[in-house]
Structures are given as structure tokens and as C-alpha cells.
Length: 516
Image (cartoon, rainbow, N blue to C red):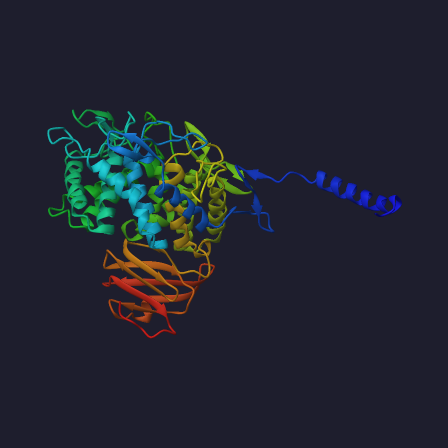
């Protein structure tokens, strides 16, 4: 034993160390995660984007169930919302919009990861919605019910939102592209005919298709929605898939787009989207202007005014809904009647900024997008998460998890961001980050990626761990149509532009070329 005198300095040192530790300020938290900053003080994601997305998809794949008339239903077939701790609660379901975003999640995550099982939630939603179409003798026959006010997993409501009918039908077409399902294609064709039969001219107070209708009687319950871009997306897809034999859909599509550019783009009456809110021309939202901007950036050939229109939409959204800042990151609120910060909308804003940067090279948009994406990660993997399955809050300002805001309308925005900002994707792995079309099949190997696209023309962005050679439909692709190297701040990025080819093989240049 040391003499008591010798022990005194050690005791004093321990006391000093204890006092220093006690004086350390508590670590700053955002929701359940410690804040991470780079040396310049800019917000970083609390974990890698791949980790966030993988855990979110795993939750959907293993979603708990509740007994309904149909048997054991995953919760997303029954309700829109959970308690903060992830326990079940019933709330009006919004299956129409969720179906579209479930398809986006499935298509983009499967292409990125090769995970075939991620299609299952989208399939279950599609089959349930398709099994509850309206009867043939209703004013709106053969269309989906877009919300379930019961909510019990049995979709029998008489009222629906027409923009969500179009979103669900676009989801049917996405599913057809993914799987070849001809029933989904035929159902979408019947819906397109009903949409065309119910369109009107449109003016400042009436959109070309109404917002809410009584599907049985045909009564218009609300004549205005600014979400006509959803109609345009559906009609574009229907036309591209051969459902417009007489040209009526093309005419309606052009009329709808002209209305968008003439009215909400000019007067900013961006109202009429959310299912659980009575429409009010004064209750504006960020969803429809951002999705309108996204459409223009995805199809600049269809709207030559995109260069002046998109930045104005981004400015308007940020000024009205992005006043909050978290370590410099814009934190977006949802709508005037719910000014709460939500990660899905912040990530939506980030993904449109990223697309703008991809088109223009705007460095400010890149930085702002990366900041907003980083902030959006802090609502994922709440302290109630288990077994690698992320229970996600809605955002900094809204805790209760929603299947839309926490999952289906959250996951795809990060994947869109990766395609525009490949630095968000993990280095040293093989990943297809994005496609302008639909990737039907994909297989990953250490030195090889093979995939097949639905459309004969399109562009894919990959990040690969090897120096590649590219084959298209079994023959070497013209080197002028693919580029590999450092792109938009990331190494190992490969961009492929298909022109008439569907089957692509990407192999290490050190491996003898093989046909698919």
C-alpha cells in the first residue's frame, strides 16, 4: 500500500479531472441523436445515408400487423400514423398518395440495393387499393378510393381527391414497368378515360380537375387543387405506355400544364393537397410548388421556362416555409395550418435543390441541399427503434411517425439526391444511384453490375469501385455515351446514356468482357 502522503497527489488529480468533466457542457442533441458538425460548423448527417435508408426500408419490410377483415394487415394498409413510441393507433389513412410513393421507394431502393423484398409493401398497397375500385354504375367508375376514414383496411369511402387518384394510377404504371403486371396497366387505362371525361377548362378558382368529389354522385366538393402536376405526370406515363390511342390524353395533359403555368405558378395559390385538411385558398403548402419544380427539372424539354421558374418556386417555398434554421440548414414546415418542421419536406426541398444543381452547377444550391439532407437524417432511427429497423419521427417539429412523412415520402428524396450528388452515396461500393426510367432487374457483383431498363432510352448514374467497361445489349457501348471519373464532387461515378438499349453490363476493365 502507498503511504497516505503519496496518495494525496493522485486524489487531487482525480478531483481535478472530475471537476473538468463535470464542467463540460452537455452534448447538443437533435431529437435522439448527437449533433455532428464539420470543422466549418456545417451540419453533418448523424449517420451515413445508406444506413438511414436501409433501416427505414427494413421497418417497412417487417412492419407489425393488426387483424382486419382481410387477415393480418401491415399497419400501413390500415392507418397513416403511429404513437411516438411506435405503438399502433388508428388515423385516417392516405393510401392513394402512399401508393405512389411506395412505388417510388420500391423502384429506387431496389435499383440501388438489389433488394427484391423491398417490392412487397408496394405490392400489398397496390393489390388492396385495386381491390376496392368504385362500382361501374358510379359517376366516377373504376377508380381508387384515396383515403380511408374508417380506418380499418377496407377502402369504401365515397369521397376522394382526384389528384390522389392520378397518383395511385401513376403508381399502377410504375408497377407495370417494374414487373410487367398487365392488370395494373389496364386499370390505369380505365382510370385515364374517367379522368379525361371529367376534366373542365380551369380558371383562377377552378383547377382543370376538381380536388374532392363524391365518387358515387359526381358532386364536386372542392373545385380547386394546385397539385395538377400529379395529373400531368400520370398522363405523361399513360401516353408513353400506349394508353392514348386517340390523342385525348395528350390534349388534356397540355391543357393541364398550361393551367399550372398560367395560375399557381403566377399567383402562388399553392393550396389543396393534404387529405386531412379542408381546402382553403389561403392555406398554402410547399408540396405542390416543389413537385412542380421537380417535374420541370426532370423534363426541361417540355417546359422551356424552367430556368426562370424553378428558382422562383424555390425562393417562394424557402421564404414562406423555410424560415427555421438548424445549424444553418433550412428546416421546412409543411403548410400554413401546420407550421411544423418535417424531415420529408426538408428532404423534398433538398432533392429539388440537388436537381437544380445537377442542371446548372449552382454551388449555393449544392451546399444548401447537403445541409438540408443532413438535417433530415436526425428524425430517423428514434430511440424506440429495434433490430436495425428504423422507427422514424416525422421531424424536429413533429414526433408522431407517419407512413408517408417518415417512410414512403421520405426515402425517395435521398435516393433522388444521390443521383444528383453522388458524394452522398458510400464510396467503395457498387450502387446504381438513379435512372430517368425504371430499372426492372439488377444484379450486383464485386466487379460487375448488370441491369435491364423498361424504357429503351434513358440515363443512369452509378458509383462503382472499379474502372469499368460498358456493354449494351451484348455489344460494347459507344464510349461517347458513357463517362466515368469524378463527377459532381465524387470519385468513381459512371453516367450511362442509353439510346435504344435496355440490357446493360458494367464490368471491370480488367475482366474479359462477357455478354449478359
